[in-house]
Amino acid sequence: MSGSRPAAAAPPRRRRRRTVGAVCAALAAGATLSASPAWACEVPEGFMRLASPEAEIAYRWVPAGPKVGRLFGAEVIACRAPEPGPPSRLVLDAQMPAHGHGMNYRPTVAETGPGRFRVEGLMLHMAGQWIVTFDLYQGDRRIRLSQTIELAP
Image 1 (cartoon, helix red, strand yellow):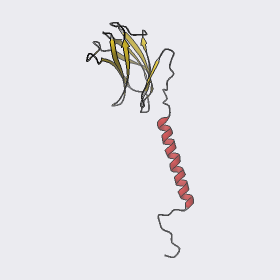
Image 2 (cartoon, one colour):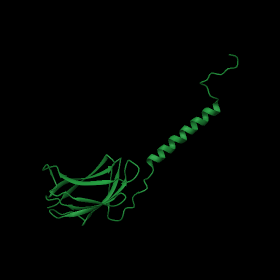
Image 3 (cartoon, rainbow, N blue to C red):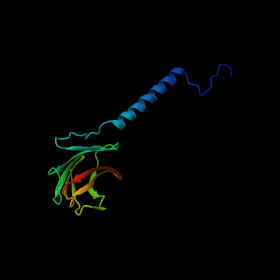
Image 4 (cartoon, helix red, strand yellow):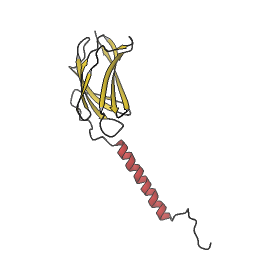
């Protein structure tokens, strides 16, 4: 046992390298998780933003300002989502909580590019408060963003 060192103790220099290496790896992983996605938003004028801790979209109504009983559409840009890559699908819906119902029409959604969608066939058939939901899908994961709008008669 003369002059032997315990197996668990590494020389100070080697421990320092391991620690620095571990810190660098952790920082790189964190940077990767928080980095902007490749499809990051370039939002044209006239779009509104809607964000949660997990995701962010920009959208606009077409034509601007939905009216009671009139068909309208939306353009939606997915700016940020939890997984790498843009969402594969969008579902847009609206509910009227005071009356316990949703829209009478089911809109259609078309992907116009990575993370970009066009929605047609929306109609809010009554005046009052509506909660519009934007469901982004990445694989089996759904991320919901919602916006309350007050529709005048």
